[in-house]
Image 1 (spheres, rainbow, N blue to C red):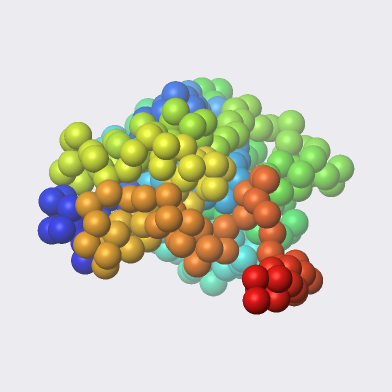
Image 2: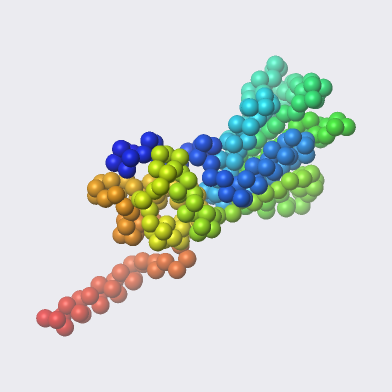
Length: 296
């Protein structure tokens, strides 16, 4: 809606994960390198964690692009609230296994046959599970058992589990200690620093057609960082809404007032924010009324 007004080619702050807009911070580079290394080296289990909105799904999309470019077979499970039978159905569908998909036994036989064939050709296969913190215990146990498929060269199936910090806590449970011991690589994505937030916004605007952005001043970006706490998804949402608000007001630059308006509309919470409560509003109204009375 505001692209032509600001002179850019496309929306720079789309919330959908797009590898083309990947901001290659040092930690995101390291996370992607870990994922690719784990697959290439047939390490078996790889875990990627991070708070909501820190870029886990974008990392998985980048991994998918890499796997497709290398013609590596993979299954991607984006819905983790599934039963064990649905889990095997989804694997069979994604890997296009020629078997009776309603039978766990048939799926396992077909999967094992496919993995052995891939290994004989010097290749591997990958299972990617997003939102893995939502997996039931029974499904996690099935995933652990799939990790037993191996030959002398390494694991036949590389398994990537991505999820919120609750995944780490779930994997620490005593009944999953066997799975925890099999995890060779772990990486935890953290929120951006203030400097990374500035570079992140400028990188996305440059990708959209504004190499020398003048929309967000440094003080405004510092305030956006403070209010979003460096969470990429929130940064996108705030910046997008700020540009939309500025467009509606026919302003070429984002002001602190616009950031305040957007933050209020989005009901953002951040350290040090003065929270409004009905009691506080009532007390403020009494103070205002008292001042008015004195003036009169």
